[in-house]
Image 1 (spheres, one colour):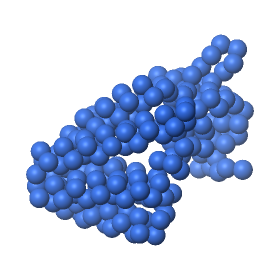
Image 2 (cartoon, rainbow, N blue to C red; image 1 turned 60 degrees about the vertical axis):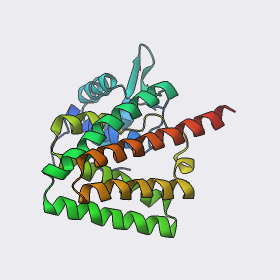
Image 3 (cartoon, rainbow, N blue to C red; image 1 turned 90 degrees about the vertical axis):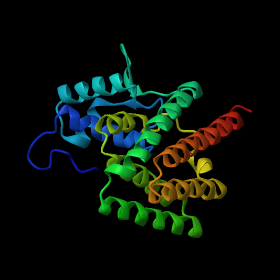
Amino acid sequence: MELSLGSNGKAPNALQVADFIRERIRRGRMVPGQRLVEVEIIRQTGASRAKVREAFQRLEVEGLVEIEEYRGASVRDAGIDEVRQIYQCRAALEGLCAAQFITNASAAQRSELVEIQRQLDACVEERMPEQFGRLNMMWHRKLIEGAGNEIAASLLERLHVPIHRLMFESFYSTERLKAANADHHRVLDAIMANDPVRASAEMQSHIGAGLGVLSLIHEEVLA
């Protein structure tokens, strides 16, 4: 049984419940097509039925949840065309953040980004794809945080949720890990050289490469 969000004596609000569900979608614990059972969410969070339903409505607006009459809520799936558009938006926004990180990030944030990269290098060497995936998310978030662009960060928070899961075990194959990590180093090199134009271009190239891999996996699934 999971710890209740209301364990501090206060029942969670709809925003907290939405965060709870969103994080489980992000981590693949709730998958596309899966029904979201109100009773289970209430048990897991300690929220009221009204707050759970409000959370579903919030997530429907974000495009993460689909609510159907007589069937209730379920995790929404996305086709490859939608995924392509998501990655195109990510490329533009994260490219902007990479450039803005150079001028807005603190010395501590720069050091933290370098340290996460060091850990990513170790994951590649030791072939630890799951840990790489977690650190990869941290690396991107740290860069976005250091950029100091709250609007871009808010938009990217929605775009980062993997509503389209095409077997991420394949996505993080050994060769893909090496390629993604090499991309990170090119972005980081541009940042450390204080070159915003190159940092933006390298980040956009990195995101584009990720889309290319997902497209290939999609074709293999359909073959």
